[in-house]
Amino acid sequence: MQQITIDTASQHLHELIEAAINGEEIIITKDEQPVVKLTPVIPEKKRSLLFGSAKGLITITDDFDKPLGEFQDYM
Image 1 (tube, rainbow, N blue to C red):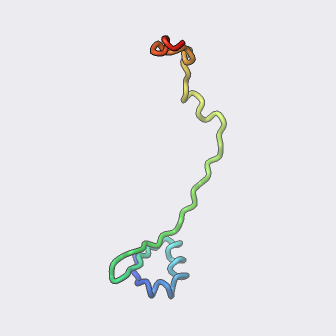
Image 2: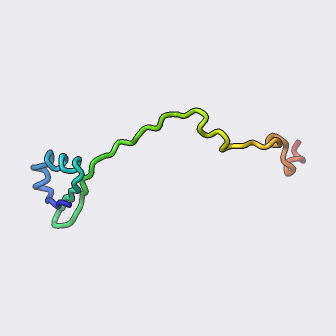
Image 3: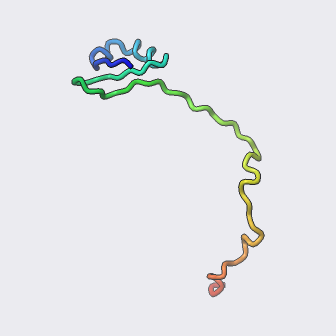
């Protein structure tokens, strides 16, 4: 982990970004207090659609569309 001041970071931003991309953790400080952590953005892997992959996870009972007993007065 490397700690660096804001002034130095602004002068060497390109090098710091390259270091972060290569896995180094960079902490930028202001008034000797850590304020920013420079880390690389890891792209999300897109999942391909698998048709039928949820088969069997959802079941509908035979009486699904049967009127509910509590609503008999309204029918």
